[in-house]
Each structure stands twice: as structure tokens, then as C-alpha cells.
Image (cartoon, rainbow, N blue to C red; front, side):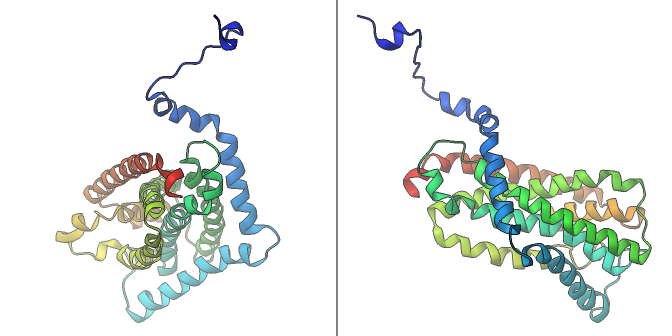
Length: 281
């Protein structure tokens, strides 16, 4: 006796582990969902609101002013050789803000989309990754402010600026790993979401945002670069200021290794816990 599926020529194959092997292919198949979620986040941030757009200008500019006054004028910390203190601060603030925005938004994204996750199947990685689009838009706005600040101080970038996209990608990778891990952990332990703002508040002072990493004693510089944002910020400054802000190569290599490990660890942790999202949410 033949079944209806056999008569129609359709063969259903049940194979253990098949969904896991097709997971990365499904990421591409569901790319339209990624665009829909990203556009929704952009609309929520900017549609029919003035403060959303203004905040993208005001927040980095005011942070730069405060850091310049505190570290440059009150603490009298030296700037990177030949660069105005405001330019140096903004050069560290932009990659940090991109990192913080992705980590903060992506870590809370799974819980925020609980209804969607509980109803249909799709690769859950799409949810935290879609939040990157809003962070990139804010970053581009801040980049325009940086261009204005550099023009004001008469700082003209050289060929190093061509490598700026490389360090933008590194900033994203440095944030994606911890963000994916945090997004998965918050599903299991909801109160962990309150830890993220504290970590970011501490991290901005533990990273060379308001000062140059060259101020760190030589014997501690390699250890300091265990913070992956140290290498990213140094590279970002190097690309906009050029030879005035040289990269500490051993520390930069260590930061790259830490970024790679964090990215792998974040993806692996998210994929492991993802299987239980529907039950936990």
C-alpha cells in the first residue's frame, strides 16, 4: 500500500542532526527576516522622533567634551603625540560606543522577541545579529561628527584611514561574542541583564577611551591588551591619526586572539543554549 507522499513523489527523510548541519544555510535562507527585524529596530529608534536622531549626535559629542575636560585639562594627561586631545578621545570613543551599543542591544534582544521565538522556527542568531544595524547607523552619525572635529582642529588623515573599516569590523566582532553569550544567559537567568550596564560603565574607564594606552607601564601593556578593546581602540586611532598613534604590535596580536576566542565562545554558547529557548521563554 503506497502513501500519499509516495504517490506524489515527495519523500520525507528524518535524519538525526540534519537541522544542526543546515543551521548556517538557514541563516542565509532567512535573510529577509533579518532585514525585517533590523528595519523594525531602526524604525523604532528614529521614526517620528526628534530626540532619537539628536541623541546620536549629542551623546558622543558630550562624552567627548567631558572626557577632554576631565582627562585632558583637569588630570593633565598627555595626548597621543601631535594629536589634539579631543580628536584622540573621539578616536577611542567611537569604537567603544559601537561595542557598547551592540553588547547592550543584542544581549536583551532574545527576551525582547520572546513572542516571535516561541511561535515559529528560524535560526535564533538572526535576532541578536539584527541589532547590529542600528548600532552601525549610530556609528556612522558619530563618524560624521569625528570628521567635523578633525576639520575643526586641522587634522588631515593619511593613507592609514583606508584601514578604518578593518577596525570597525574588529569592534563588531569583539562585541558579538560577549553579546551572544549574554543574550543566551539572560534567557536562563533574567536578572543577569542588570549586570550588562555595570560592565559597560566599568569598561569605558578600563579601556583607553579617555587616555592613550601608551600611558600604561611597559611591563603591563601586554597584560592590558587582554582587554580586546585596547587593540581595537589603538588600531582605530592609528587609522585616523596615523603615525602619531603607533600600534603596540604584541598587544594588538593578543587582542586579536582574544577577539577570535570570544567570538567562537559566544557563538558556541548561544548555539548550545538556543535549543532550550522555547522552553525557557
